[in-house]
Length: 255
Image 1: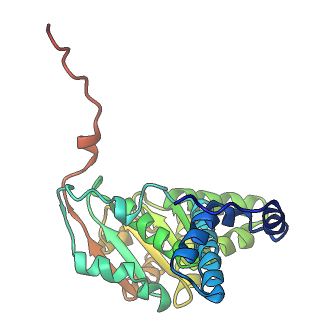
Image 2: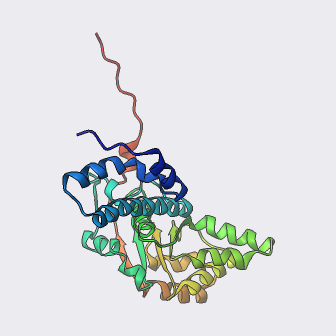
Image 3: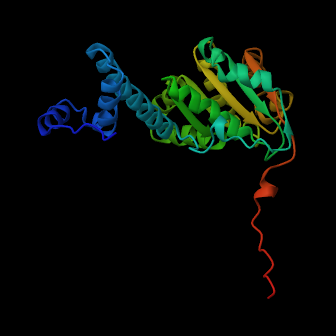
């Protein structure tokens, strides 16, 4: 059946109301309403629900972009053939974001290449879809930003950016030893976010090895104790997926 035509007057009104994207589906919706003899109120709800869904999707996409999330790192894109093992029931629980509602944290620990960052960003995407503010950053970048901010008298403002978001994704924590200033910054970050916001931390080292990366063992013990006692632990083991992505040249076919 041919979709119903949309009048020029209706198109103009929708544009005035900034609802012109309704025109993408309105002809089909009008046809559906006529076929099903839909009451006007139900039809109005249907077309406005389309617009709500579209705007929610756009808002989630913009939040993910501002967060610095990898667009491809979403749970529905996880490679089911990856030769890794982890607690899938725990991942399902984390995907429900109850840890975020209760201001708990998550550690994702495992060897390089097993998908730690992917799963962290996937949780970030879920949070964005549900309207939460998210920020993803490598630990070395965060510490470098805070160190530079001290030189420009903007430390408090920069620290607030990392503290204010609902969910902070901190990648590759404990990779390098921290100097005294970096140790104080890491301590301040954990202290500020404790019980007020959640973090997902990925690391190739277990929390029991983090202590050695701090310059100040007292601050280290305090920060690690606060974090680990409020965190879920997702441990991934298996083979690196990067080897399977290594480019190769296929041998030329001989005629």
